[in-house]
Image (cartoon, rainbow, N blue to C red; front, side, top):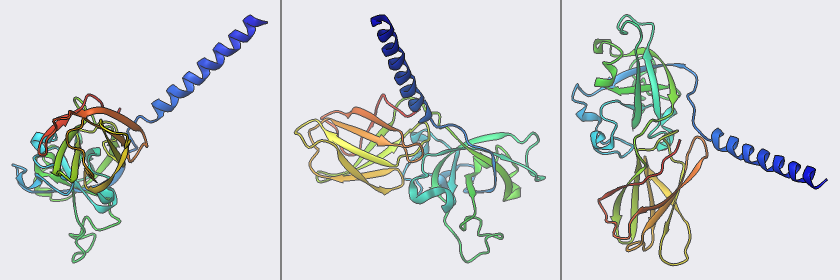
Length: 262
């Protein structure tokens, strides 16, 4: 009888463990279905005009995205919560699409704002509720001839493949910290963020969304090692990035953690 009880307990533990593993696996972002949209491009072959942008990445070569980037229409930008998301796009059904409809992968780094002075089907390509991608010209030229100007596309959101952990760039002053969150894998987005210093018993402090990929908080955090807790906007998965920055952290510097989303 005791043996049977032990066996039942072992089975129960195994089932609980498997359920926990399934829950963790479910949090992993997976590619979505292909959906129709349209794409244009902005800037020239150097992609100089794409640097910076509404998400706050600054130099996109340093950020790791290079010229494979897109400005999203308001429908996809989601008040900045769409920053960092990744998409596969292919040109379809137009004479200027390249043969074979090659697939490109881009990261959302900017906003394509509405232009209400123009009709949504004639120049106001990014007017809501249109789903539209305004690509860096080098990215556009990987799937279609630039002379087209605008092309029909199929797109799907995909997991962001990043090397290394999440990067945190600090800005602000001794009384206010602004943190840019970059190199985010998985869904690529951040919906909530907390910070905790290594000194005292204050615990986790919720940071407010400033704009794009930046989050802010007040208070005195200088001289403390900093840990962050981040929740994905899309999946709801939360990860802990312990000791992301040393106690000697400084405004203007970037710190890379060893942790990332999946």
